[in-house]
Image 1 (spheres, rainbow, N blue to C red):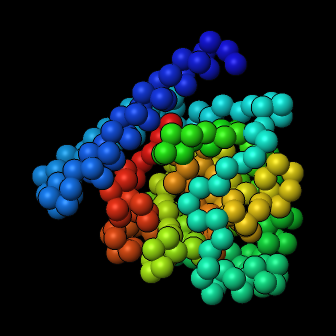
Image 2 (image 1 turned 60 degrees about the vertical axis):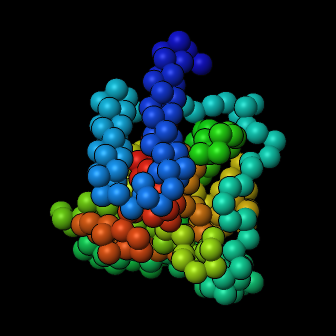
Length: 258
């Protein structure tokens, strides 16, 4: 890795710590802080500044570091759910995802319903990248799958679409399905892919089978697993807790750039 890459990573780590610090304040500051409108506005303004600063320093299209095959971790440690027990997921798992579909709807010209076979037949990007977890650990793996932008182009993004919402088949609390979201800048990044393969094999159940999001310039909780649908929307206000993601609804920052 070059000195230039090292400097870029150092800047990203500084920004990452700022984002995590904001999340820690929210999570560790008791309900009184999270219920304070003043504190909420302060955290949201800090998050927006962090996003703008990182994109100014690194550029909207700057690539996350990619690594040689020799650096792939022996085991790609899973995070979050590892075997969803929802009826929806277990039915698809039992049939080896033969009837599974990825539905793309919302603010699109042509809603789509794509099978795993159709997604595998699309041109794929392969990248060896580092997964950084909010818990403080990292792991390197090789991911392959269609670039999200290519899938969105098939559906035709309407001009008013501002966010891409990812719907999942797992529930961490037995009630709310996991979900995540990206703005159009992150969604159209060349390294943002819908991964169906990990280290040359189909994505294991523990890592998000049959399909998971990879958005390499953000932390691991943004990379939704067990995908079932994608919806393009103008705002996030009426989706679950209204903050753009399962963990964001519980205090994490929406923008988790590294």
